[in-house]
Length: 156
Image 1: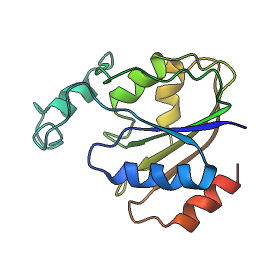
Image 2 (image 1 turned 45 degrees about the horizontal axis):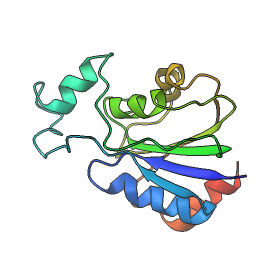
Image 3 (image 1 turned 135 degrees about the horizontal axis):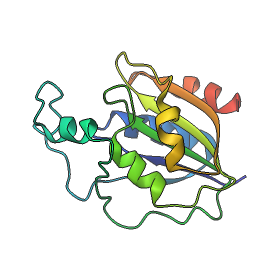
Image 4 (image 1 turned 180 degrees about the vertical axis):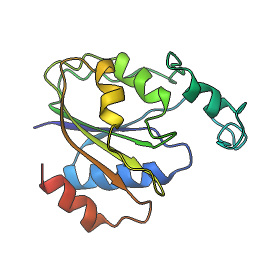
């Protein structure tokens, strides 16, 4: 089974988890980078006018991705990671899903958050990845260790 770890990380916390999953699964890696990088001010969730707040309040928001999304044809399973924003995936994750053909692909979602859970996140994402199947979803603290990641990967 060929696997890919794709992730969006605004502050580096999700990147750390993605790297551990890639190590555990011997996966290829793709970082979902915004065409316009987020600044500290953009990520201020307490400010209703910050870029991230405005994006998350708009269901149709699809921030542009830097570069080309990889062709998923050769991958069987794709792990997709992100921080949880407003109890869901950042809108750039929808951009990533909508840029590829997901038919027949297995998806393992992973997220980082200090307190928000991952339950319900797939419900808001699955229309962006038609034909795919969610095989697992887990929220990790940014303090997760490699053995926790390895255990999660083995359960699939």
